[in-house]
Length: 212
Image 1 (spheres, rainbow, N blue to C red):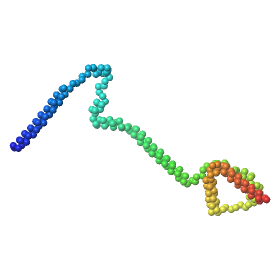
Image 2 (image 1 turned 135 degrees about the horizontal axis):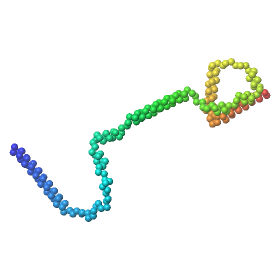
Image 3 (image 1 turned 90 degrees about the vertical axis):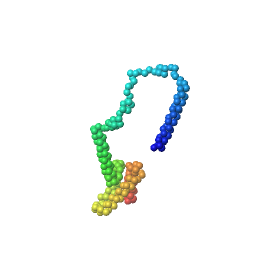
Image 4 (image 1 turned 180 degrees about the horizontal axis):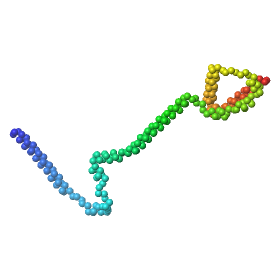
């Protein structure tokens, strides 16, 4: 027990010494501050300031906001963000209509693509029809000797399927070649009329050779 008492006495003595040192420092600081001279203002600081007391607000928004709890603030934010049921239904309906329109548009585009794959690209045939001469003008341009030869020829029978197929393939090739021609693409009417004129001139030359 004697050893414990000695330890306690040492501890108390150390605490007393610390308190004495603190008191000495505080008294020294207060003495130093008392010697400092303060410059007091000679004029009124608030002179020239007109403050209307009636217009002053007794309670600010920040005062009320600070008194609110976290839950009340959370509910206010949720209420400001909430949407009515009718507005939600309108938004859902608009989204569904947009989806339906997009699906219908995709179906239409798919049908158009299928048609493009099956149908060959020919273009507008109206310029060709307008440029071609009529049958009457072609018959008038041929001489009478050729008309008599055509009448004298015997009627041919129906050709075989293979021959007709070859003729059809040749006609398609010729037609595609005409469409891809540069002169025809620039001016189709002029190209067709020039071709017909050349063909008629060749027939006239052949007819002149036979008569001679």
